[in-house]
Image (cartoon, rainbow, N blue to C red):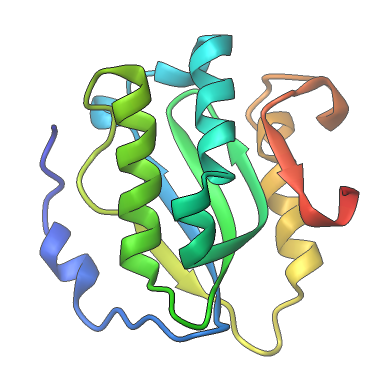
Length: 148
């Protein structure tokens, strides 16, 4: 696994509050496009719904990009942000049979004035902005709770 410079500094001051909504970004090691493979991307999608991950956090929206993921989640009452992210990343790596991720992850706790639906739309439009597709509906590796 690639070490991220100042990774420990990224974790300083990180708190995990029950019911808090976070935007998490996790990047593959060396930004390898692991999830360019359809089967690897679908496996990463399924891991958002893993029962152990779901005990830590409710998933509001996500997108699996070729070399990273964005995940909008809300911490459950007894959940923990770091545990949720670690479980998710571990499940993906375990099912793929290889170490996939850079150490750590980036998180942003949403403020009261931030609109969760706008952030979810921003997340799912990532493939469009990256030029991977011409329409969000053409990209298969995302979801948002409002569509269920």
